[in-house]
Length: 536
Image 1 (cartoon, one colour):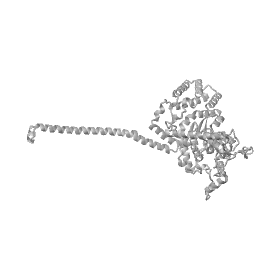
Image 2 (spheres, helix red, strand yellow):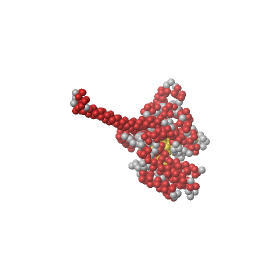
Image 3 (cartoon, one colour):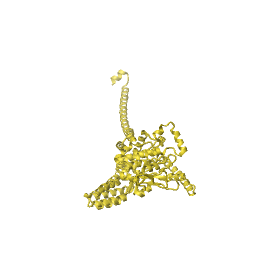
Image 4 (cartoon, one colour):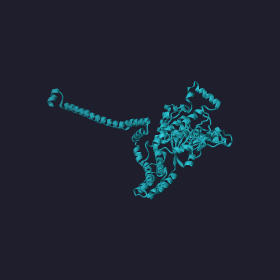
C-alpha cells in the first residue's frame, strides 16, 4: 500500500479510507437489493393472496350468480347455488346448530330422543316422542329467517330432525318391523295427519302476471311438493282450475304456450280488425266494460273443459277452491269447491272470479243438472265479480273446511307486491316505506268504516275496504321479481315470449324457497304417502 501511495502521490490513510467507502457502498447496494427483493416478494405474495381472496372470489361469485340467474332447470340452479353458499361460507353456518333464531337445544334434545328410541327399537318411546313433537314449528324451527342465510338449505340440525321424523313414520307404517297391525298403523297415521294439519297452495290474482303461477306449480310438481288443496282468485282461479282438472302426467304440457289458449282478452278476429282500440272504447261506453266476455268464456272453456267441481275432484283427487265476490252490497263472497258447490261448472266459476270491474261484466254461475244440462246455479240470478276483491287469499275459510294450517301463497298482484319484501330482511328505507304504507292503509280503512257506519258506503267503498284490509301473504309467500316494464302488458294477450318469461320468473322465485317448502311439508307428504300405501 505504501508503494501504491507513493506512486499515486496520496497517503496510505487516504487510500484506506477510499477503500472503506467503496466497500460500504457496495455492501449498501447489495443490502438494498436484498431488501428490495424481499419487499417485492412479500408484496407479490400478499397481492396474490388478496387477489385470490377478494378479487378472484368476487369474480367467482359473479360467475356463479350469473349461472344461477341463467339456469333453465332446478338442477342447474341448485349446482350454482351450492357454489355460492360455499364461497360465502354458508357451509359452516349450516353445520353450526346454534342460533338465536330458534330453540336449537330443544330440537337437538328431541332429535336425540328419537334417535335413541330407534336405536333401541323402543316403539312406545318412538310413538310418545312423535306425538309430542309433531309440529312444523318445533322450537321456532320454521322461522323464515333461518332460510334466508343460505340458498340451499338451513341448519343441518333442523334437516336431520325432519328426516328422522319421516324415517320413524316409515318404520311405524311397516307392519313387518313393528308389533302393530296394519289397522293400528293406519289409525295412528290418520290421527297424526289430523293433528299435524295440511298444506294448501293459494294463487292470487294479478292479470297477466298470473302466468308466473304456472312456473310455481311446475316447480312444485317436479319436486313432488304440490299440495292436494289448491285455491285461486281471479287469474289464479284459471291456473288452479287447470291444475285440478288434469292428472299429473297431463300437467307438464300446461307449461307450454302452444298447449294453452292465451286469447283471454281479444280474439284473433278482433285483433285483425282495423280499429280494435276503437271497438274497446265503443264497448266501454255502451256496456261499461273493455273486453268481450264471450271471448274470455270461450278461452276458459277451451282450457278447463266442462267439468264440475265434484267431477274434477273425482278425477284428480285435488281439492279446487275458487273465490268469487258479490257485485252487490248485500251478498257475502263465496268460496266454491266440491263441498260447497259440487255441481257448479268450473269454467263459469273461473269467468266469475276473473270478472274485474270495468274490464269484464259480472258473471252468473252455471251448474250441471241430473240431465247434464247447464242451468243457473241460483234462482236469484246473482252476478259475481273478481274473487280478489274480497278474498284474494281465503285462508280462514280453507282452514275451516279442510283442516289446513299451512299456506303456500304465490302472490303476483301488481298493487300488492311493491309492499312485500322478498329478502326476508328489509333495509331501513324499505322498513320506513312499509310503515308509511301501513299508516296510509289504516287511514283508508278508518274512513271506509266511518262511511259504512253512517250508512253512506257504496259497493265501491266496501270493495276498497276489503282490498285494503285483507291478508295477502301466507306461511311461505312466493313473490316473482317482476320489472316495471312487465306491467305494460297486464291486460293484453301474452305472446310466447312473455309467457315463457313469466313462467321463468315463477320458477326462479319457487327455487329459492324450495328448502323451506320441503322441510315444512316433508312430514305431511310422508304421512299422505304412507296412508295411501296402507289403503291399497
